[in-house]
Length: 169
Image (cartoon, rainbow, N blue to C red; front, side, top):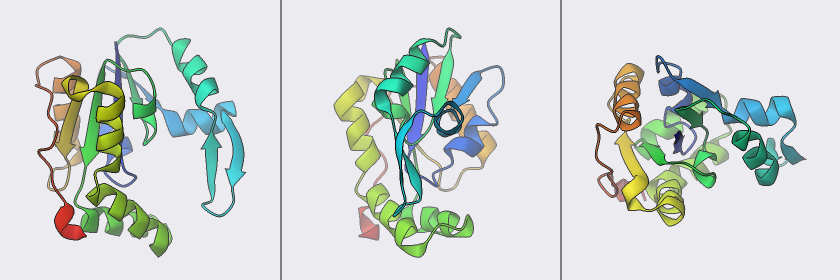
């Protein structure tokens, strides 16, 4: 079984999945860098352009089950369950700025979060029955990891549309 943990940058994916115990977690952004699974560097955004075919091939070679794949790109790949972490855009924007992201990039990500971009992409690719939305705004990383664990174990029902940040716009 493969579980994807995705969300807009700054929602807490890496921090929460680092607190999962007993699970094999792949931090996909690290794999992309370390394995050279990108096609070019986008100098304007200071980011790598992911090689989706190469990533899919690499993921298919992983045999651990359950496998947790964490990244803002994780929902683009095959998964049995997809956890979409959400965070209020103002809080998320502050987190990104504290990490040193440029104001424009932090604001762009905050707008994407308010518009449910990753949630919509996830539902489009995986369907509502395989999507689990978790609001991380007022939760500590251990509590978020606990909720993710419930998804992995099949102890949580799918949920879509419970989080709304349109007030940010």
